[in-house]
Image 1 (cartoon, rainbow, N blue to C red):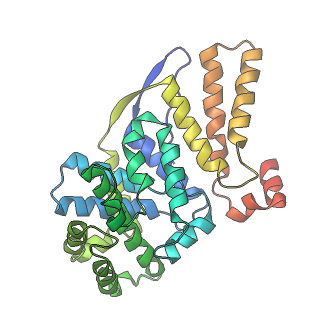
Image 2: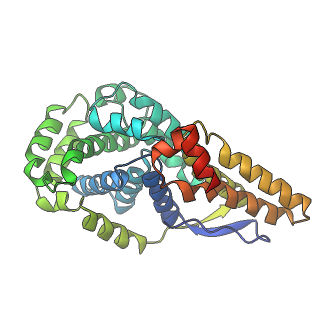
Length: 305
């Protein structure tokens, strides 16, 4: 998994590739409590293809791809993910939308994603009546649409049976035209998904190829030390939300690391780097099974490793 580069101790800011930051966050989400890896990547690919049919600009299509990668940033457990995948309109779906919006609001370079993430499980008949710019409402609703497509397709990925069920998936999405999903977005999806290539891109090789192509398209930006702290906090909160035993764990360890660095006479910027590093250290354990995080005995064994 790629990770953002920590700043030199003497600098107040650093040049980073925002695309690599987004991909690193997406990879972290694949490891944290979600057994169905690459869900966000498939959602991003489908949203990108629908954006092309809608004749959106390349910049808008790229934003929808990145939004797809991070739309479930508020999901922290396998249990929540299973509800979202197995139930088309789960009553508890709004909580992870609110949590995700709160997480993204803490990192300014991703602020444009806050409102689409907040509303990405809101049906169009409700969403269209809210005081939101049309572009934001359509971004949220398109992610909702392709998210539901991926939920319906999930049962067929492992057995390689997806192409035999695409017709039924398309028909079900069409039945929600105007109620859950905006008519123009349903029409765009139905047009984009006619081709087998649309569905083949959702297989592991297709995902890898798409990510490889996009990693060659850099998105440089300058991040201040404050924003880097926000980013490190974003990573740590994704991990800490996984279990009641890890709540604020990364933040606590990071704070202690900075305190020790200051007491050892380190330069303030170097002490901050130690805090940033420790905020992200718990990612090393993210590949452990959710059961290891959610039982006292499992957490004790993992912490001692």
